[in-house]
Image (cartoon, rainbow, N blue to C red; front, side):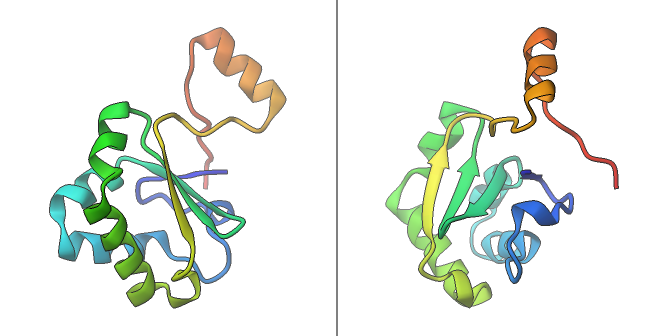
Length: 117
């Protein structure tokens, strides 16, 4: 599952990765990048941090050397175990893994899975 904004969803974070701490570090260095990132969903898997921007405009703003350098710097500072993690910026919503939920979302014209808890 993905983690959206500041909601806690441990399945998007492997042990030791703290998205909220990462966002706080980005905010202290660049409020504009933080504003965009806080609206994104993410997933950390297979040594890759995937940032789902949903919109091409956000991807364009984040897919710069300045932003990627900032992310690497913050990963090294606040998440040292993930310092060598690749960063992939994707301008779409994350795929819905549950086949039934994906069909429901398609019938309803889109949407996102929301977990209670």
